[in-house]
Image 1 (cartoon, rainbow, N blue to C red):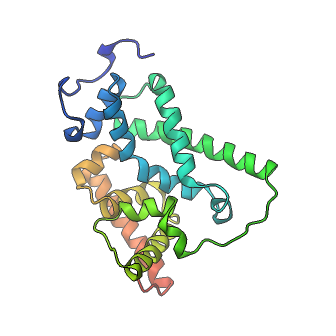
Image 2: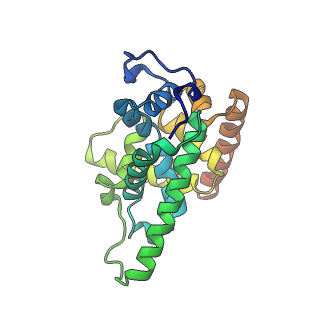
Amino acid sequence: MIDSMTSLPPGPPADSDPTSMSTAQLLVASQRGDNEAFGRLLDQYRGYLLMLAHRYLSERLRRRIDPLDLVQWTYLEAKRDLHQFRGTTPAEFAAWLRGMLKHNVASAVTRHVTTQKRSLKREVTVGDLKQGSDAAWIQQMPGSTTSPSGVAIRGEAVLELLNALHSLPETQAEAIRLRYMEGLPLSQITERMGKSETAVAGLLKRGLRKLRDHFQSQSSPWW
């Protein structure tokens, strides 16, 4: 348990609306037992954890293990073990969640490798984007496309972007995801990642340069 309430940084007023809280305020409110704030806090890390789950699993394993299931599993453990979290910043909370996710990925891989011998029955197609983990990635993108052809094209673009993000260092990929998939301003990205604006700007610049080189080398129609 947290030793005392004085170990926590100042939080929002008791009657604050969680929808108007910053990430840091949501974290403090969550540690003080606000379940609504905790739910909103976890929602802010959904895209980050999905990106990591995709990164940690090979394409073959992603057909057997749904990254969304791993994220949900991690959420349940985070709710159960929040009293054990000793950090005070969003960046520390992200690292805590990442550690749990890594453990869950390792456990899931071990379980599937040792107990499941079934052959894969189908390949993942763009049609599969209508549900499951990749759909969650599409929903992270600003705007919406409702026509069937638009959804298919958008889905292909997201899959290619996701694969390209896997080739980047984790911090560069997360900065790009927050800026261009969640549409967050620089000030919120710095809070979420625990880095200065200069550092985040550098991550974005280097990451975008690498993405550009990747897509150009692949002759991608999306660049």
